[in-house]
Amino acid sequence: MYSSGMFINGEWVEAASGKTDEIENPANEEIVGTVPRAAKEDVDRAVEAAREAFEDGRWSDLGPGERGAVLTKMGELVEEKAEELSRLEVLQGGKTMKLAADGDVPMTADQFKYFGGIARVLGGAATGEYLPGYTSSLRREPVGVVAQVTPWNYPIMMAVWKLGPALAAGNTVVIKPAPWTPFTTLEIARIAHEAGMPAGVLNVVTGRGQEVGEPLVSHPDIDMVALTGSVETATRIMQVAAPTVKRLHFELGGKAPFIVYEDADIEAAAQGAVAGSFINTGQDCTAAARIYVQRPIWDEFIARVSDLTATVRLGDPMERTTDMGPLINKDQQDRVLGFIDRAQQQGAKVLIGGGVPEGYDKGYWVEPTLISGADQRSEIVQHEVFGPVPTFLPFETEDEVLAKANDVTYGLAASVWTRDTFKSLRAAKALRFGTIWINDHLPLSPEMPHGGFKQSGFGKDMSMQSLEEYTITKHVMAELSGVPRKDWYYVVFGDE
Image 1 (cartoon, rainbow, N blue to C red):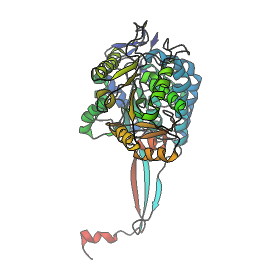
Image 2 (image 1 turned 180 degrees about the vertical axis):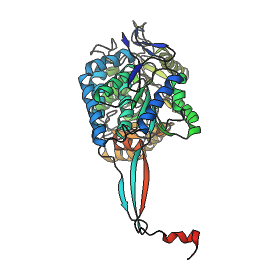
Image 3 (image 1 turned 135 degrees about the vertical axis):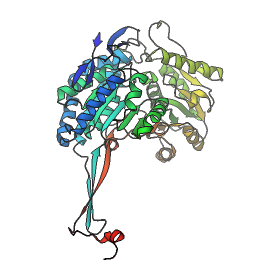
């Protein structure tokens, strides 16, 4: 049974109210831990600690090499503790051990090391003499105190996507993990403390959205809010953050098109479609959600994807033989099943799956499901399901499919499958999505930015661009003559 306090000002503390929340294993509905259920008073303590730590410069005044060394050490400690971190990821979120141990946790370690390295690279620029007699330079400085709200689908990895650049740039942070998956974010705080991060620089508050999230993002001492989450949550944050004009950074939902042209490698595309649709039980903002297949290969492609889907193994997520685990909770299970039911009512056809798998009465399971026959404007094509439910749609021409691919409010990621280089580059230009893959779907690298267009948000995670997101630019202008009366003063004093 996991148990932990919150991490505020370098100390492990309980909620002021003494309340706790139980954390459930979504695979079997067993209680696997407890954490504090914070409220406004706890948020105030955390923000006060972060503000004090920022204002006295205990972190921001360190050299970038010193900050980078702490982040690099955090990456090394994640590697040392990888087995336990992977176990906690599986326990709290139901993701498979394969994904946690071979994907999320190693990527987290790599991200901390990456941001530890590029902390040294961020700097201002001497811009020269743009006005005669003056020298101008630019400084990049940390924004200040940052509130970060992270999701339940990739708890540890989304934590480093937010923490890495913010801390590398010299900010202090109050981070709120999703209420269902707090364990690994708390462990990251433990790792930060062990790596030598000063008290107050990183603070973790646990609890529920309205009780913790709203007091945090609306707090007058918060300078910036970064969210990975839903459009609805982002909209609410914009409303409550507006009175204090905070900087915002959002990575939101997606409805990724997966375009398969008739000249594609059908086996590669079919394998990619299954992996891209069912990774993390489809609870991925970049998951292959709308699979457009050109008419001449439709039958062959659907048959191959169906065969591959039938081999996806459900089971205990702790077992490395399991390919797909449960959804995060009952609400999400009901939501996904509701999408499937309404799609059928609107004329779509379920090719495989469509319900709760036999023998999985405990936990929040949904079968790998393939849907076809949906209309382009239907709910299941237009809205994010966030479950193992890709929709397959045929197309005739290049122009048609690019128009349909763009015909959603989201713009996070897309993929194109073709042997024709010119066709793939035309698609990459035409598609209004932040990441375009060609002949693959999902791989990401810390050196490259990730973020969306349209209602998928604004701002970038990962890469040097994410580091810049957590800074502000200051112009410093120095007069060089030393004379007491400058030439431009005549506008005030006259021509004398």
